[in-house]
Length: 134
Image (tube, rainbow, N blue to C red):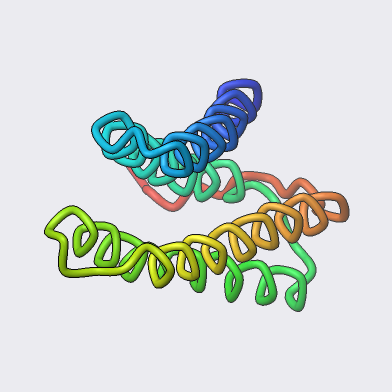
């Protein structure tokens, strides 16, 4: 896995999250929907890259479990964020409910990022194993 590419994508995810927050707060609905879609794609790529990057690292099990719980909770929050956002577009939802889920998502996302950095700070590199015999 290309470390600089992974880092660049993580920076792109953070910037896209900030752009999504700003566009939502100022009411740029169309831009917000495009930015949120892009952010979701970038997040999916970051998760995939993290899997590839972490294949050659050994993590402390409890740090890995903590990170996976936070990351899973973050991803689970995407559904109610999307659902309440679509309800606002359809004029059947309230912004307060959407905002609550967005705040929950952001708190969990920051926690997942911090836990990943903390987990990687003590990671050990392991030799790759040949799992595909010829």
